[in-house]
Amino acid sequence: MSNSNSVGLSAAGVRFANGGRESLDRSQAPLGSVKSFATLLAGVAAALAAACCAFQPKPLEEASEKRPLLRLRAPDLSAPLVEVLPPAGSRPDDSLKAAVFARINSDRAAAGLLPVEWDGGAARVADAFCAQQVREATRGHFLMDGIPPYARTSFAGVFGAQSENSVSWESNRESFSESITRLALIGHEDMMAETPPGDGHRRTILDPEATHVGVGYAVARGRFQMAQEFLTRTLERLSILRRESPRPILRFDGKPLPNWRLEFVTIARESPPAPLTREEATARTNYSYPRPGIAYTPEANRQIRVSGTDTQGKIRVVRSRDFTFDFAPDRPGLYTFVFYTAIRVSEPARPGASATIWVE
Image (cartoon, rainbow, N blue to C red; front, side):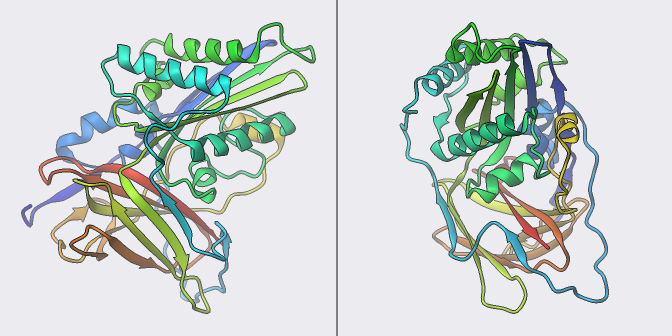
């Protein structure tokens, strides 16, 4: 890798569709919305393939002269938060989830793609999300707490690079004439039937870089919600712990999968989540990862410069491929870390993990 190596930054957002009374409402945020942030220039076209619409950048703000008293609100780091790669060959123990999981991999096989592995952690996040949607009578990607989907996943200790498909059915009766498994499969089939350029859900299902998926659902009071949480995972493990200090100093430790290497980590800051009304939550029909303002690279490879960021050689990497770095937030907000990995130096680095912290 020469001294002239530079990583270009671009980004993309998502779209939303909905229906009527006893109707299907589908919302989606493709993994391309995070994958396209910082790919090598030679691979930009491939990374943008999953994008749906234009992205609105959210640059880091200038630091204030006086450092405020900060505290970590989420995730809970009273003990280190550690995630390891889910075991290969796992299967859902729920018939609806099993049916949707099988259909996802059937559709991927028909498109000539590798299957995705079942992700129990992502499924638990999806279950909790759908149950809260039913309680709030909201739909789409946001709950009334205003937390973005990628942060919601990370706060639960699930660190894959995330994208989400969401399906909503509503009835003016207490129950549906169709079984909920049939409703879930109809929702999936409807997403697969999309045609360009409005085929964002389909492209998320057929994302060649997706490695895992978790499916969750909830049904009550004439509402059925289902979420498909697609993840790209190229880390064997990732942990976050809080170092002893009067102010928050976080340590990230991890290790890529065999044959993979960590190229860099981007860090983006956005405003803290604000509570939403039911109408506001439902009206938020798209989301995207925020645009980064900082990038950390391995200490031994300071030639890399990530375009549009303050690139710093802060990551310590050892021969076993283990890596570690510290981060000290200087103001309130959501901070999102995207871990870019590659197999070979000649290949573009792509997201293989994501983590978000909330500081206030």
